[in-house]
Length: 193
Image (cartoon, rainbow, N blue to C red; front, top):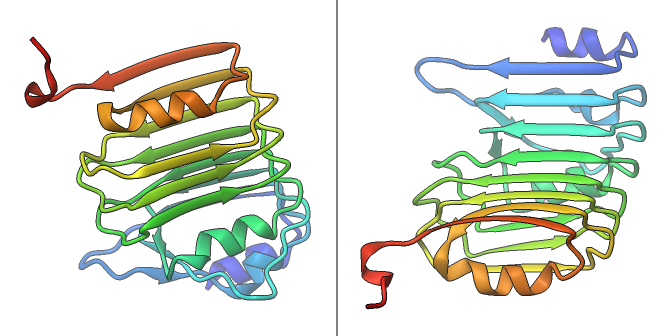
């Protein structure tokens, strides 16, 4: 695959957009996950994230994952835990994916954007990012689930767009925020007269 050749040239930025019909997820080569020079990585489309145990991206600062598929619950966690200088993360979950628990534990992270589509079957979100300055969460999932946010002492700005049932615990856990924007969708049955 051409990605193997590209990675062997010590590239600093890589954007992979993959689509096929009929749908057939593509697994990226394992040498991508050990590229020492990679600073920016954007993956989009029918890419299956199968992160090998020896993954290590020592220079990666920006990671964008748009509608990719995760091989299992540990795929994202394994990738993030092997990016020691990661500063900017975007995760846009694919409706047909099956990650039940979204966990983001990245000490160096400064910008986090999470997008969870309506009707996505997620049980919970866990976020621990002590260096975070900007947090964006768009969670239109109508299923009730927990959102555990801890250790965000440096948070400056948060943009939150979630269903009403998720908002109370979330707001209570981002106490250090300086600027907060909230948008909450309310269903007709939740209105109090």
